[in-house]
Image 1 (cartoon, rainbow, N blue to C red):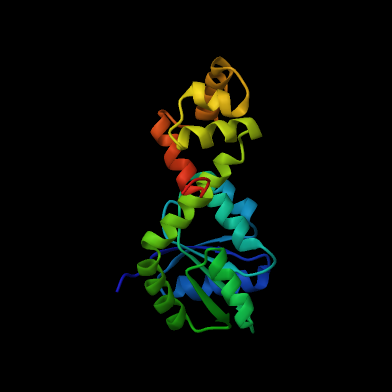
Image 2 (image 1 turned 135 degrees about the horizontal axis):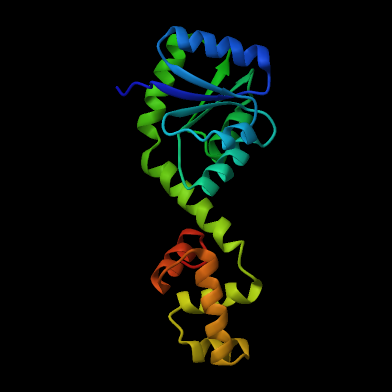
Length: 200
């Protein structure tokens, strides 16, 4: 079983944050405590697991922050007396595991090891989807329409006919669309559109 040596802790409660940090450090796990997602974003981790106190929509905020950084880390959420609905929502938002707090250090380290193993392809696919959607959101309505046409295999002339604009205007929208998506080639733009579920 894989072991975790680095962990980033996100918890707005200073007493609980200090207690968890001390307990985990005593078991040989290096902990970087953060009060908020903003603090985490300012000191982005290089590796490890993120342990986060589940409150509000903090997990989806964390996923969006990861998408902006283009890097995925396994997320383990925790909360006091969580309901089944709360756990399901956290997992759907992107957590790979959920812990009912309080918990022993041994239970925590065992959970982290399992989380690292489960984090692979599903998490990466989820991150790619979120990153693709965040890129698509940068586009204007017309640029999205052009992307849809490109992804359907239409030429600039055919896209122009569909949108009632000139092929030259399509070309301009297409260039802007590629730039905003950070795509070097049309194939990159199509891949992003597919990952964002814009086309199937």
